[in-house]
Amino acid sequence: MKKRWASIFLMLLLSMSLILAGCSGQTASKTDGSAEGEQAAGSGEGKPVEIDFWYALGGKNGKVIEEMVKEFNATHKNIVVKPAYQGDYYQNHAKVLSAVAAGNQPDVTMVEIASVGAFADAKVLEDLTPYTQGVEKKYIPGLMGNSYWKDKLYAIPFNRSTPLLYVNRDMLKAANLDPSGPKTWDELVKYARALTKKEGDKTKTYGFSTPIDIWFYEALVFQNGGNILSEDGKQLTINNEAGKAPLKLWSDMVKEGIMKNPPGEKYNAWDVAKQDFLNKQVGMIFTSTGDLQTLKSSASFDVGAAFLPAAKSYGVPTGGANLVMLAKSSDEEKKAAWEFIKWMSDTPQTIKWSLASGYMPVTTEAVQSPEMQEAYKKDPNLKVAVDQLEYAKPRPMVPGYKELQEIIMSELQRAMLGQATVDEALETAVKKAQKTLKK
Image (cartoon, rainbow, N blue to C red):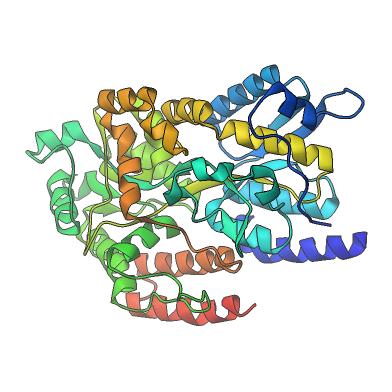
């Protein structure tokens, strides 16, 4: 049986490395956060239950997570959570799958929201329904689309985001542009032209930059009324005008010299774009809500956050990661894991997390709380992502999408580098996708 488990998960790891580098419901502990509920999670011998928590955010946000874990441990004497940073989402996912195959997996981890379906379908995750007992109703409905797989609840929102447009307001004002930023694609091009500065043949400042990333591409497809996958999840549906428009926009801006295509792959490209923005080499960028506080604290200029500019309409995918429980943990570890997940995502903690990081609060009560309302008045940037949820959609979540998004990004980049036309790139993506989606 152990060999069979190892074989299954090694196969899964191999298929998912292209892009990332006995399961049953249990009786729930109490969900009111009381001392009695904590005792239910403790071991029968009175010793604290130890659980491992793997997380995927470094830097300032990682330090905040470590502080939150310390607070949990100090207030839950029957549980000891051992946090460990495992690198970015791609690295963490690969390590989790390897650990599951080896039998030394964590008890709780972050899973990027589009990956929840793949992990759940592989029987890696525990169904949380017996534990939540309806508590999931407190979370913002617009953030729950990537929490379910085949009508079962597998994930709880934690560090959740939407992509935002960040602008250097000082730069926009100097160019006599509206400091709140462009509202449409046409205005984005107009602003980028006005902000681009050259010295001879060399570009000193680009108006705009974005990583050629699946998340931003999804947003622009949604804005044109398109979808990435068919309703049944069996076909890639981007070889049409809605799918071609984002790539044409970006490639035309790069050819004109008003957009920088940041070098590097995956999050390396994100880091380049953010650093160019902070160094005033780029006037506007796309990046995550979760970068808000870091950009604000690091910038020597007035940072503004705005909706992604609209095409036919506004539109974005939600993003970030959810907290999940691993299926192969013991019963007492699962009870302790649920206490931890519930606490980390509860209103008091999600308020602190949002204010410290810029990620969205995940409960309706938190958004409506006096603390968040006062914070929104002081810094309207904090509320942009929450307001943008009105136009948000869940990310595609079929198991094959983790491999498929790598295919799409590879073809997008080929077109951006002039190695293929827009039509050729998307035709190739669709052909490769059919093999992946039939697996």
